[in-house]
Image (tube, rainbow, N blue to C red; front, side, top):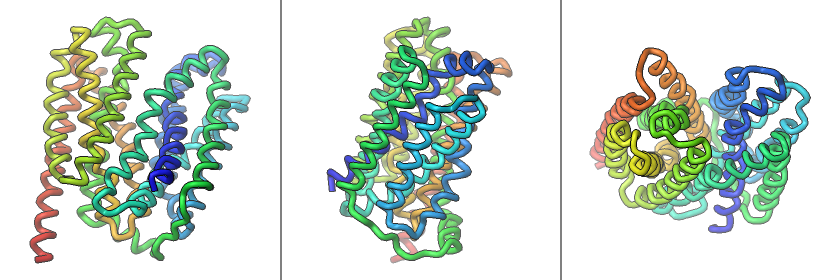
Length: 384
């Protein structure tokens, strides 16, 4: 079972690298295709929107298929999409290839979460899903910096070509190590009814608000560190690696703790996250405190959010569509968070004080978490 989870983790590493690598290559891409950097930024927003809108449709199409076979189709799409990115002769075709590649993102993590949960005993589900998602967090530590360096040294196309063998390795591992798993027979209307249940909607709200809070600051973390903390761009890169280490360990710890007391992890984690956001403006002007606060933020944020995917698998009787929609919720929150941060800055808020906006969003998430706990207690009382 551990080998199966490692195969899923390897695939998640490749997908995570593909999602985030584009950010470090935007200036090169803009220059090569003779477009502005904001227009090149549509490669990021287009990917996120494709995950948000397209992934549920792909999940529905693959819903009755053996889960291992579905994952193999998605990783083949991932591999072919990255090859098309590397070959794209124009910006429009590159954007289309990115959108195509993104279709595998939410569907993969949604289906793989259900598969991972079914590979282990019920009291280890959150840990199994967190281990699989550690591939996504490790991408921020290893894959993105290495891919960006490769792109800067040999051109952005080299970075996309390097993702193709990662896809091939992931496909090989899935074939060799992951068992077949036929989903329980369900109908689309049944899955839609499951998604509309209040406990599932509350998880989706938590995922969205958590992501909004994160990307409201993360989108602008480079200028915060450069203009407020006065770090050089090269040092900022290493701070982002430190952030990646924080989210990796936070994700694993949050998964382990969630199998012991899921709601306590969410409530305490959200409370600590609000406190961290409130302290960040005070720490921002000072190098060591600023770097420490970035690590602490990543650690707490992913520890608090680690239970979300396991929770939605638990709350939905037919978890396939709900699990994929949770990934859509995360990416929807990414887009809202980036936009909200931009609006706040446009209307006079400084980079230093941007975390206060995230603290407000995290407070809303905490209110949703308390509501979810109340619903849980009512369900237990009704069962008794």
